Image (cartoon, rainbow over all chains, first blue to last red; front, side):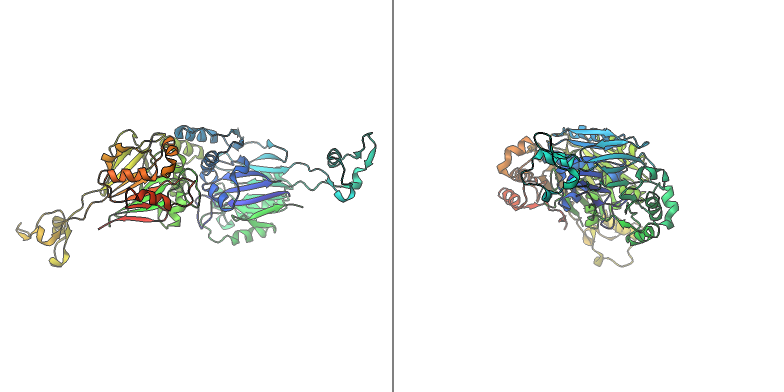
Length: 305
Length: 305
């Protein structure tokens, strides 16, 4: 598998038309990363039968309520349900202070280690790295400090063709083959030449999450050639003035960014409460960038070979 | 009408079994009072088609997350949806600081006046009074400062028997009759004697909300003869030790308080996540206090003549 993005919510401002606030589960090789956490995200996780305790890392883009007001409840439930596994949290300045103040008045100390890393919303840099992914911040152009996040899978290992190998091949040789080396016997003689028993690694995918932002081409070099881009599309182009005044984007603007970035696919979200029907947003985006999709809650968007 | 209590949520700690965190709408003569505001309360209000903007007063019992984490989202939505009507908020020390900090980082100033009154959780006194109701705080015995709230309807006016009066009776005389005075002509002569054309006022009802608390009889004098009592019943009696250790009550303890207070009716809530089936909680309470009911979300409990 590669990257699977599950949309938990994609409405802006106030919940409406049965749509929830922004949150997404990014599943990379079975590792759970949560991106934004609007109110009731823990209920959405339950609704889609996703085990919250599997989440190890949370990224919060900014401190408008529709992007983080579900965080305190989620962290509390993790604690109450007996979590011991460490959790890493990335977010803007202020988030740690808000959590700490709430814990102070509830006289609560979490049972699990929670590590907070402040994200500088003015610059693009690697903020997180583990065995599976590198995450780079994307400075967005919003009313308050706001970061997007670029997830890039680590380079994958070569794929061993099991049928070309004896059943008793050693684990050590499997590891060598995956790393691009030949298999050898105890004396160091080559027994299987790498390129004859392995296939090239699968593609490493990338996913960029950009919400909230006004149209700003300065993010294009950061997300260039991304396989999948989530870009907010709060308004239709007919409300371009409203979009600009509130530091949001239109569907056409989101599509223009996807086009300029040479993205593989575009997910549209952060829909304004004013739109009950969302199809016009997708249609508008497709006039510029055909591979545009509505990030409707409950939907899965998958990057895999 | 009298007092109508709509249960929006009554689960403790973490949401579970499709049950939401604590919140109730207390409707007194069409005036909306919200009591506690767990996460997703604004979604529950939508679900039950209750117009959030009609809420003028909010009472928060304490700062455990399951009782207030939906407040910031509700206040924000009121703002985003154009509210201008003032809102009055009662809650413990710290609540104002938490709201102020979140507003600071979201760089938001609400469009409507929000007045916060700190409730002293150590004493019982009148904290709110308007044309319809007097609200008195009830000091509860919990891990952190926690207040219950006693709603007492104001004394009602006499009920005019329209059939006993001519159609052209003046508004001024109707007002006199409602206030217990006789109707008079322009010269001050009695034209209708009050007790012949009016009935006594309807009963003024009372409702007490007590969550969260361990068993504590010191609240009995405050809620004596209350028409309806909501008392937390987090556990069954078989988990009495757990109840005591966590400063919560069992169903039997809640019923004992209702009995000692001579309550008219008991609503049980704040159910532990461990119970999927709730009927045993009601059954246990009824062994002590027959008029015990589960405060299930979506249910209405009505006090009227």
